[in-house]
Image 1 (cartoon, rainbow, N blue to C red):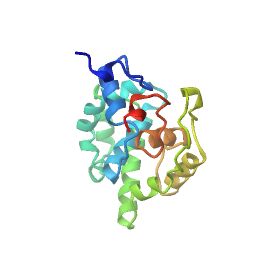
Image 2: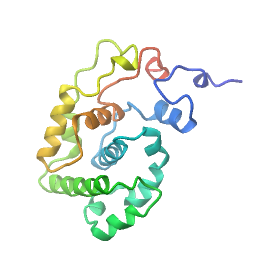
Image 3: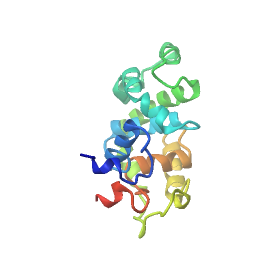
Length: 190
């Protein structure tokens, strides 16, 4: 018997079971909590300039190499850790992106020490839901005013590598916006 989601229309991911599972079970589902959001911001930054499937295939390697994305641990990383990560084939070995992940962990720890949270900042920038879903990917913007504002808010508290386009991708992934196209199995299932 054929699984109905095998024949379903998806925004992306039909050609790869890992990608399909990510689309069906994670992308666009609300994410809360500083550690979970920190992980997503790191992964979105790592994806910059690459295909998301590349990051997705290395996700478990990232989790192992970055101590489960515990920001309090990553914030303590030094030069030896950067070199360790640069030598780790289980992650994307881009020095600027690795250093940004450490800087962002330090910014998050400082934010928490002042009584703030990444969750509060991110979700304060959630836009109003769209009245109609995008018909095609051409109808999905690369950034929106709220992603521009989120990038500015994060930079103000010390985050780096958080441009408006990367923040819009994070907003999509973390459920702040629903960009599943009309007819997508994830849109019609809800």
